[in-house]
Amino acid sequence: GATVVFEPLNQISRARNRGAAAATGEWLLFVDADSLPSKDLLEETLSAMQSNCMAGGATVEFESRDAVVRFWLALWNSTSRVMRWAAGSYIFCEAEAFREVGGFSEALYAGEELDLFGRLRRLARRRGRRIVILHRHPLLTSDRKARLYSTREHLAFLLKTFLTAGRTLRRREDC
Image (cartoon, rainbow, N blue to C red):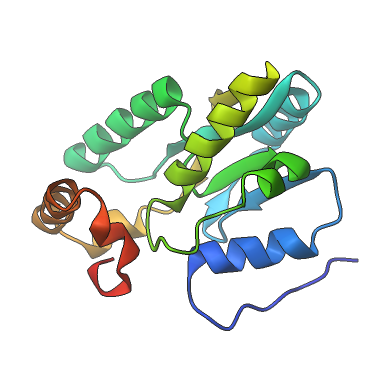
């Protein structure tokens, strides 16, 4: 009974927006193909959806044993919980709220989930609702980007993004 939609332009924001536009439910759940949500995470997500939650995500876990990768992942998970930023690999959101804030920005080629959650946080605050980052059952997801790029390349991208006030996130060739 699933409907498969196709987005010809290879951009994650466009693909996610295309899927959301075709969805008919009250809630949207975005899960990357290289991620494995556990039954416990899905049950915790359902519980959050049945509470005063408007949107959320989950902390993430990699199989990597690399100390540098594990350090950056711990830093991300802490930041995610404090800032209530969901990792793009697992996002759930009321469909109406997603549409009201305009979905994922198609001007961005990276960081689109952070932008979305900034807008969702503001909407949730106005409505007296919550944004949650679930952490009891982290999402197992691929560490392919950690393996694909060196630490030096990651740091150079972060520095360039910082120095350009995020303009690198709007250029496909920079991402």
